[in-house]
Structures are given as structure tokens and as C-alpha cells.
Length: 136
Image (cartoon, one colour):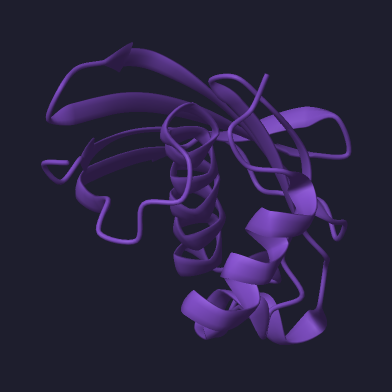
């Protein structure tokens, strides 16, 4: 069972991560060590060539990783990204993006997470990241 609810995380998103909240991004599902975040499609997210710009895919991956960490530890404001690696696999459709994250390893000071990003049920990017967990 997650230590934060969908409602709690979406409230955190609104207050603590307003740059992500302005995109319309929201947490759709959460469980212990798992999270699913949606980025609704918008034309202003496109880059030349008509594809969703990479920074938006990196943002949804990072927000999803944060949700995974909070699902395990509860509301910890100072848990921060220390690394993020993303592989763009194919051009997304002109549709919502869905990021599905899973914990790989949770230690005392670091959490390692992976996120797969989907567009129209096809994987379009894969990310891994590490979060630093502040001492209690």
C-alpha cells in the first residue's frame, strides 16, 4: 500500500511542483513502489518535426520517479533527483503520454527507479533515475 494517496500527490504537484502542474500532468495510479502519471497531449508541447519535445518526456519521467519514492516513504519534500537517464525509442503519437514507474532498489540514502513512457499503448521512451533521500 502506498504511503501517499493519489489526492495527496496531486496536491503536492500543484503546490510544490507548479511548473509540472501547469502542463496538466497528474498522478493516475499509485501503489507501494509503483506509480502511473499522465501528461495530457497539447500542441504547444511539440517541437519542430511534430513530435513531443524531449523535456516534456523527461519531466513526466522525473515526476513519476518522485511519486514512486513518496509511495514508499511518505511525503518527503527534500527527496531530490541526483541522476536521470532517458532513451527516446520512437516518435510519440499525438496523444497523452503515460509514465509507469517501478522501484528498482531502495536504500537508506538512495532510491533507483525505472520509468517506461507510453503513447497510444506503445513504449516511446525508457528512463532510469536515482533519488537522494534526506536523513530522517
